[in-house]
Length: 331
Image (cartoon, rainbow, N blue to C red; front, side, top):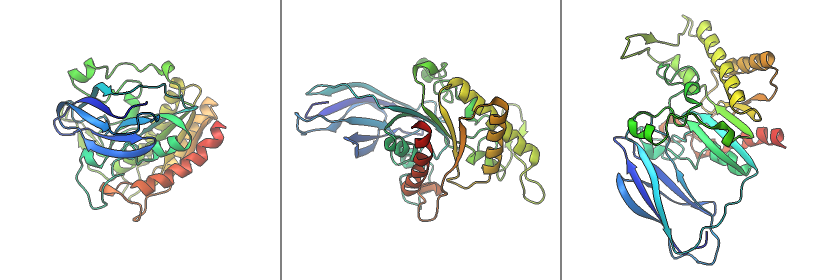
């Protein structure tokens, strides 16, 4: 755009989990803020040279909040004293699927912070954004903290992303979200990625060390089990492997031309062997050779962020490995 100033009219709502945004001008982050409930105008920038072209991005830092049906963020209108210009299409498209790591939980904030609040989420200082920038790719993110392939960290089997992947924000709840288009079938033909990166398995592994989860509706309990010697129950591991293979098949059906990369390891690798076996089994059964596993560098004490999650430096290291793995696939 060419303008000396830009304003946006935003509308926000929430019960517990307020939305946050970041503003980038010409690729540099210039501001970050919580959006208070209500409808109001925000100044994005002012007093800039009206004759220079500026690339402006307004990025929602927080994930879709499955536990807060009232959570809402909309840009209602914009106001400027100049002109909007066409945006050049990027040569590549990448989709990222994951959990809290991909949502950028803990990527911003001091290592001592332990509150589970939206302030510690960043859609800028995380490996997905860094990878896309390095590859000059347009990207989309489907992620939810605490969720997995089969189960969430707390053994809740409803917290699995594959069941919701084919919907638009299907993990949300509430009539307003439904009226705004959540839970509708996604039109995959409208946006086909060159690569799909899946970073799931961390919470499936964590469930083995978490208490059982009891369904409040049925009373049924669910638990990923440990053997007496502390190893993972073979049947539960096999169940996870089958789910990984099924999800790989679903991803291929939805994205027929994409390279599928299962990236894992930023918070440890207890499920790495199971993921590798599952991908090998899928490749052998389907004949689909365009599915690979990439081990990401594990977070260290020096690269930890808030809430015992990867910080910006850990995300940068993971992005470097991922870029090195993806670039040869797309050349």
